[in-house]
Amino acid sequence: MVVVKPHTHGLGDWLWQRITAATMLLYTLVVALRWVMDAPLGAIGWKAWFTPLPFRLLTLFFLFALIYHAWLGIKEILMDYVHDKKQRAVLQALVTLAVIGYAGGAITILWSI
Image (cartoon, rainbow, N blue to C red; front, top):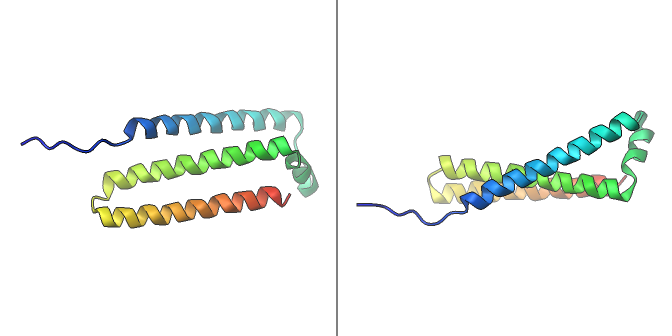
């Protein structure tokens, strides 16, 4: 007997992993270039570095990409290795709550500068 598995979003998740990875790479290159041109010194320098709104928004976008990238990776690991659906649902909910907390912390930190 052939068992047909329900349709999953494997291709979409794979594509989003690549998009978030490319986003993080682009941000890293921008930061590296900016670092070479104007490296901050001390706490005042770091605050001045992150004060411009475009750079804060770019950093926030990077952090959201990083958080989503990590969440997708953990979700895939849980789908591969946790076969009990109830346990997987609980673990995914815990990871989702943690990710929401990380996003809130990132927003708080960036907007307190």
